[in-house]
Image (cartoon, rainbow, N blue to C red; front, side):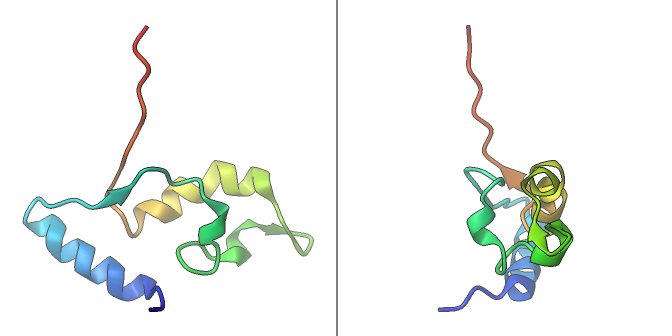
Length: 75
């Protein structure tokens, strides 16, 4: 089954209208490039720029998913 980002985005938006939010355990997964993330947003001089990805991927993630798990460490 192929990942259809636009279809998922629409379905999750409908769920969010009923206060049902779906997310993942992280947003910094470069393996989603080409499915969730547009590789062109993170390329620099023809190569995937890890620093651009780290800095900007949350914004692109949030276009689809409205929540994400955040691990909190209590001291």
